[in-house]
Length: 131
Image 1 (cartoon, rainbow, N blue to C red):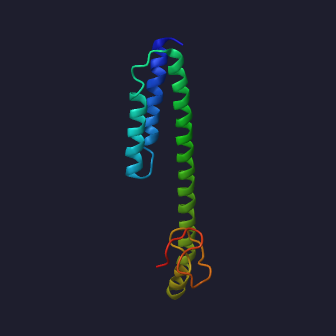
Image 2 (cartoon, rainbow, N blue to C red; image 1 turned 180 degrees about the horizontal axis):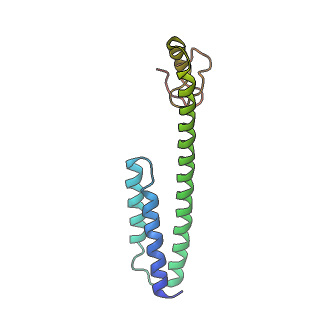
Image 3 (cartoon, helix red, strand yellow; image 1 turned 120 degrees about the horizontal axis):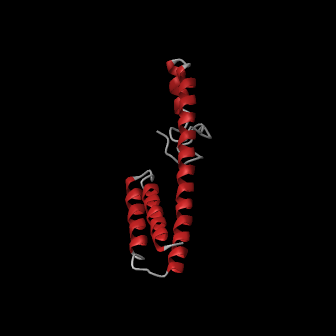
């Protein structure tokens, strides 16, 4: 691989890492990941040995794959939660107002799990306090 091709590959991976960092759901996580990426690349900017650059580039690609995997898991969980919320809304809309109130109070607002036992103060699935 020529030096120019190696430099192009490094810049491509750097941009991909920054794009991946922007996908983090919380602002603090996004900023932390962007800073992490910048520092990791900046620390090695003076490196001239092509073998070391290739090794570090392989490490960066592996970390990028891990970040993308975590983003895909998070996105899948979000889609699952949205689908569950839609299903819950359609079920609740068919009930009378009294039954709606009782039904909604019997389920955790965070994860949709039924409180067990019915008088429980916390959700046994996610630990959210009952309102």
